[in-house]
Length: 361
Image 1 (cartoon, rainbow, N blue to C red):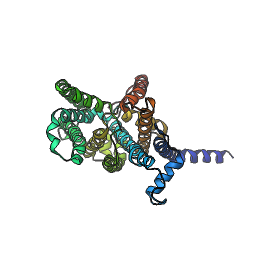
Image 2 (image 1 turned 30 degrees about the vertical axis):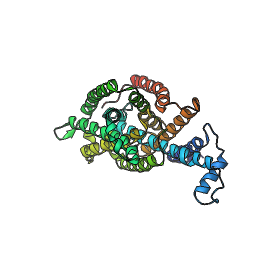
Image 3 (image 1 turned 120 degrees about the horizontal axis):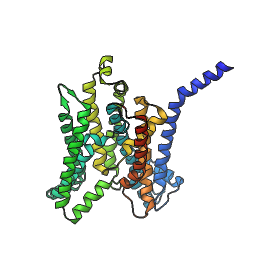
Image 4 (image 1 turned 120 degrees about the vertical axis):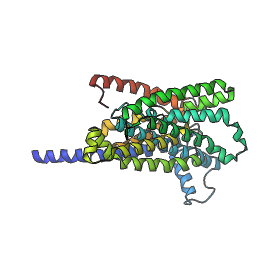
């Protein structure tokens, strides 16, 4: 009898991560449905089903009211799916950076991608009026492209500053990131100073973050990037597990640590750069989601990355839904909500780490 209980308990523990990941997946689907239904105009789940059935050709055209169809298909569904992509990119990047720095307080902002993107966007808003000759479809992608390139340039600069004696020194990369970010923020301040009122409002609105401008065109970029970043990150799960023991130990096991660090930093830069390019700055998701996932799934990076991807998307979708409802029919910037929730969580995490002692980097 005792052996049977022990075996059942061991079996339950073995399947626990799978069950938790399944629950996170169901929660993500439920949040997408809730975000589609909830708004200034509530759409019942049955009507959502009818809209999707008509779009798939399962119901005759004209079955659903045209306004309702436009709200569901053109506004809420792509926005909810884009919310998952944004959350997945930020949280996957956060989990990777925490593994690379071996510190649960690390986030993608440490390598300068967000600040670099912000500088590029500020420059585009203030100095980019000469691009008015471009077709509208190209102008739509011009600012996100500028943000992506700006974030990538700053990351490459920080990585180059940290490269010494044939290897990337992680503590130096952290310090270089702090210094370069300070310089970049000074540049943003200068551009803000010389901007006019409409430009200043545009810069401020972008830095607060919003999913209001995303649609199917944005999703066509964000979706493939989110899938690619997750797959690439999963490919380095074993390296991240080995790095928990230290770089020297990971080398001794046989991993190409230097190459892995470069590719991981580039992957995080590309993913987070794409995210902030379309939605602006959304804080704390890259810290909260990985840490919460680590608490419930453990530190093994394969399931940590998958769990962070699911939980990060869930948190962003819920935050965006709250943004649309709190001051409806107006809309709060999502960066305000994530900061209001994330900052206390970060402080609690900081105090917890102080009591335990920070892990060595």
